[in-house]
Image (cartoon, rainbow, N blue to C red):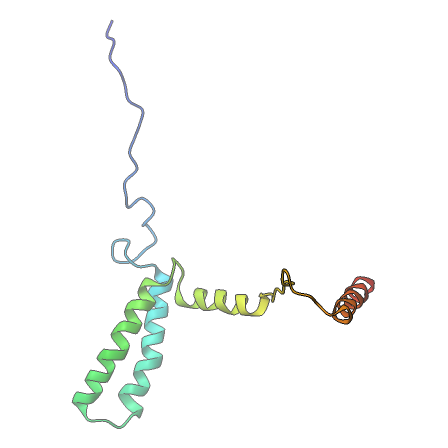
Length: 125
């Protein structure tokens, strides 16, 4: 009888989850579409509407559109730019302002009564 060891461990290739991406797994389709839309929205006014000589126009478009396209294709923190903008808007709409009483500070008793009354009204409502 042969006493050979069989290994049932298989390595998962690095590009296993890259099936729905563009350029061999480098770009997500959402990021690529957003980059094209942003470049078109910013590039059209620079190309057609702003009166500049051709060489200055090329320099301005190079300085503005290439960084915008690269950032839009990469995304921020794993999200596309519009998803990240949504996170920022959600945070700004739902953030809370926390206030704490200072340790060692002698508050006026009238201030403390006002806070207690406000808390009681909030509980009843």
